[in-house]
Image (cartoon, rainbow, N blue to C red; front, side, top):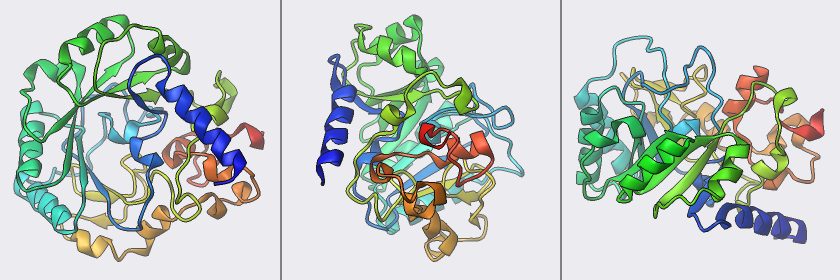
Length: 313
């Protein structure tokens, strides 16, 4: 790593741990810091339309909305329970390690599927539960519950009641993130700050370069967020990201995960580095800049857009 990358990395880590909270990630999924191998690493399995605040039609402005509960339009009937279980088994057979279960319509269904995934030996099973539904969740061995909540004093107080949870996904503006560090929150688990973005850069009131800084040793070869990721919607469409709804790479009513691994389109998303985005190729920060393609697509209508980069204004 060169000197510039080291400074950026140390600054990013300092932002994310000061204040005493276990803040694991700000504005990006936790795996964005890990080296990628070019193989399937995680499955994000949506179990329903979802009951979250943000809706597909009006826009989903979340920086970690990929593992959040949102609301989507289902284009056909959901996959059966047995088909969902088949996909989970196949993911395990492909040596996948992480499964995120999200976008549920029924908490009971969510926890049954999480328990099933853990029972067949998937190493890391995450069930993302809205804080409004947490009183219906019973802790399960080997299931890592992530509590999803919007930033408010009341929700932070309620979060303190769920100290047994593995983590918390907190939706907040960037200014609220500053408040969070001084909030006195008592929560021992990991915290992921899900930063809310406005519709365009013209309304951004924070430094996006600061927020996007990251260090991943494979950023010159793989996309720091998309690499190794497969998302499957409740109605069976395979996507490179749950929020890239218009980029279908397969139909899981018919296809297998093994088939998808041969798809050049999926691999092209995994290998979408800044060298593959024309305006980013000559940028000196390109390998320490996290970019959420879903946020950029929402802002510009272009999956290769740079709506939230101040250097391109």
